[in-house]
Length: 329
Image 1 (cartoon, rainbow, N blue to C red):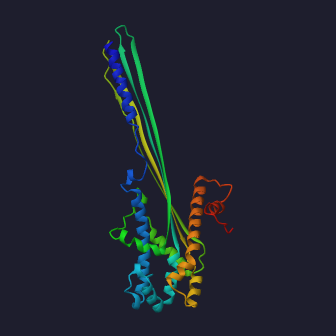
Image 2 (cartoon, one colour):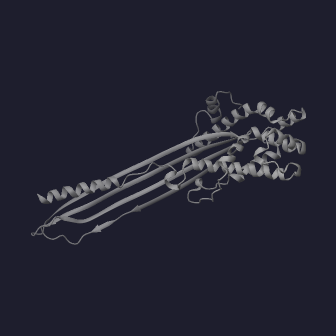
Image 3 (tube, rainbow, N blue to C red):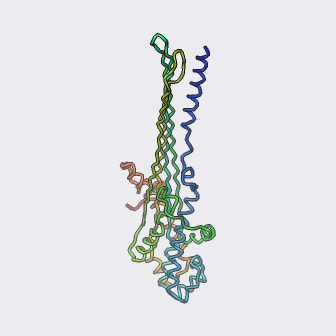
């Protein structure tokens, strides 16, 4: 009877240990990189802000008469008038870019696996050469899946609002293990977009989709073999387990830029109507609508590419219906 209760206690301990070993954390970026989601978003926005600010500072430095203007204040009416007088072409570019929209679509898809199994064999030999054997085993498999997706859209003109939020921010080094938490090359993307826009002829949308995949796994397979069990003694003769933990992070960032309508802004200058208020009242509504549409299409196209399947209705039509306007096909 005493052996029976001992067996029961061992079985209860074994089952509890197996179940607890399978507990998993809520799979979000914070658990791995020490960066919260809001920290990742701040890195992205501040990296874009600094790229735009540095480009404006470079353009101002080429004209001595306006080189003292702070880059974040170029759209203030007084400073803009100075720029328009010193270099009209730069004023046109700044006015056109002021209503151009930047769209961000973030998607964090994380899966975590905890697969655990263990077993033990109990044995009691008899003096007549026979024996009694009892094998026990347990399995506890748990999977966790997390999906976090959101988007934001802001005009270039609003980047100056990040001056305070990014004041003490320093660009992180590239993180080759968990890339989304480090610098991901947005400065170069902004530079490329501005250079392409300056060449003229850019229509619609400039899009970059970046996907990072990080996969980590570890497993342990312990085995215990006991010394031979004495006759008429009930105890474990061997035990073993298989414990595996794996995590896969897929992070996708889509960045979209709407090409500025330089032709419209130029016509405003020719009519002596080139000022920030007129440009924004003339162009902002259509540009914001187009930015939402373009970001929606980009996200849906990325989803189709990921699953290798097309929807019955293309992203252009479904996004137009979602936003309530007729697409131009």
